Amino acid sequence: MSKENKHPQLIKGGIHADHRGQISFVNDMKFKTIERFYIISNSAENPLRAWQGHKIDNKYFYCMQGVIRVYFVKVDNWESPSKKLKVESVVLSANQSNILHIPEGYANAIESLEKDSKLISFSTLPLSRISEDEVRFENGMWAI
Ligand SMILES: Cc1cn([C@H]2C[C@H](O)[C@@H](COP(=O)(O)OP(=O)(O)O[C@H]3O[C@@H](C)C(=O)[C@@H](O)[C@H]3O)O2)c(=O)[nH]c1=O
Image (cartoon, protein in one colour):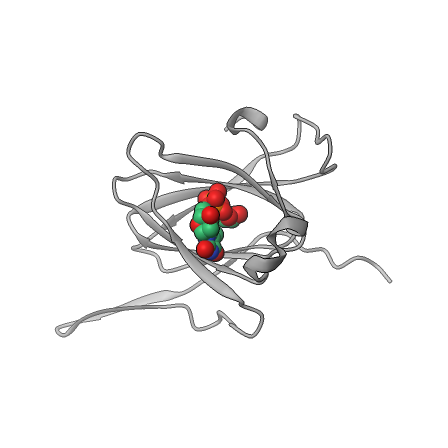
């Protein structure tokens, strides 16, 4: 059976504004497989959080405040990945209300492009299984 071609995808949402205020939504986001969520806010001194690799966990990233660039790399070999792997990225903004889905098999890096930017991350793997999933690489592993 052919391996499903799972590449990061943007799940488009929208924003409704009227005299009462504003609603940001992503109607097509499904939570059946979500196990937990957390919110990342990088410090002003370290605006770039790189690199977290995930063999199993899927990430659904949503920018709640400010602007954040998410980089991702398809890891070819977890023990000794090539330094020449293609780095792709997507900019998420609180003014656009989109979710970036990064499937398993990728390393990600999170860069805050504005002060006090906040990213909510929905994960499909319970924290108890992190040890079989997460592989950390140093900041300079893949050039940003
Ligand atoms: C991510 C996460 C962390 N924590 C706690 C435990 C941990 O000691 C502390 C710091 O977490 P981390 O060191 O994993 O944070 P970090 O190194 O920023 O890694 C996180 O960044 C995102 C981009 C990822 O892809 C995940 O791997 C996630 O672990 O926060 C939770 O309790 N629940 C969570 O879901």
